[in-house]
Image (cartoon, rainbow, N blue to C red; front, side, top):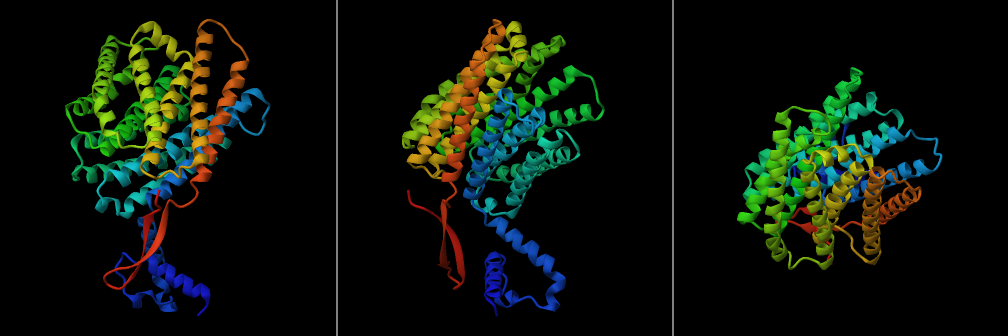
Length: 470
């Protein structure tokens, strides 16, 4: 028997170690067994998916973050230089869709799956298949949007991505509902995936408007704002605090107030996004309720803050700094949102492109991305050393510079002041973001888990993942 045959048999055996297959079932495949080769292939793939670790998904997510930053760099470069190879609008679609799907969604869902769900639930292969489906469709959008915009293939991948998120939502809710996770974490986690699924209504509305070539400009923008709101203020925000409260093991009256007010504020505060044009008085009433709930949520967060600080005493100093920046971004987000109830500020904000982009990046980069990075550092899922420290602070510098320049552009738009130096400063910020993300992805290429051979009580060889020591 050749080396390849030996290697194949060992590989099949390792892929089948949890299925209870007998040794005689692992013999080389003969002609008589060819009829069931596809069953064995599916079984082997299922076992491989079941054995994927959290570090596998995190490393992929960090690579995807670097890709997102690279696309952002191309977009900003295209404003200043003549780059004829890509359509700006098409590339922008790829950038935004992959940022949501390839980076944030993969990172948050994998962390919630592996760290919040009980171990017996995490072991199910279905979660790995659903994460793989979400990832594959994210790559599909990445490689189709730059070349056709909203076309047949990109819409197909977008639709499959949405259906994959539906499947994840159903299975995740069923499993976490049966778990012993504390109620605050359970409410936030369930709310997060529900809002993730509800946001697809905005995406399907956009698809309908484009398919029918509708000229309803108000409905078009409202659909975009609805989708973004349910993603940013629903899925992203609730996931972050579900992970935070679960890690710190905090469950008191302030966390309960915060949990329920944050979850309840998402839908009514969405109506703040519609006040940029003339709407009925009912919309204004619901928007006012949403604004009040946002302020209540902010107050609950401030009351909860001492408990968060007490619970994080044993966390790494770097984690506190990065997570602290993320929480500052969250407070700014809540203040900016609640202020849009003021008519003049609301209309000004939703008609000012730099301010809109600045707010979106404040949440996506300043709040959610920094929290994810802090969470990875604290949970030893981030290969932290001097090089990654420099890369991380370069990335943070890029975020801060990007926000300052975008909001400066927004103020310049208001006061009719413009200077080309701001475009160069934003390009500098995107260079910092790309270099920081790229180095972090490269530095995390090494396996955080080493594979250790272990003989179990039945005398069978198993390969188990064991963390490297700090």
